[in-house]
Length: 120
Image (tube, rainbow, N blue to C red):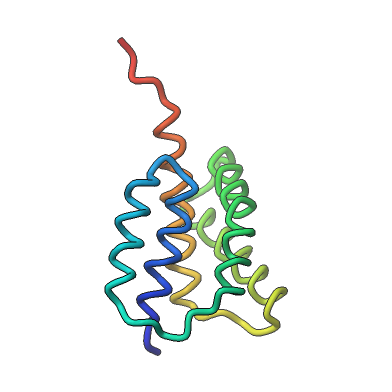
């Protein structure tokens, strides 16, 4: 299966734009503008942006539970799969789930790092 790279870059920009890494998100979005459109679906992007906060909240909550990172990843990916299937009525691509879950985890870790005081 071909990966729609423009959508991947736009998704990364949306997730990073909701964190302390907003300047990085802008750079990622600029890279997406260099790739020709491949049937952008604005409704899909709007749904993803609306759903990202709940995914980030789940991810943050999972970090407080003592379990292996691989298990946390499976729980988050299961939620992403379930939300997609509930919304669209068809299973998402596995590559989409892996990429999105990695982006959500990175955004949550960036937010956590930005709240840690630097100390004197």
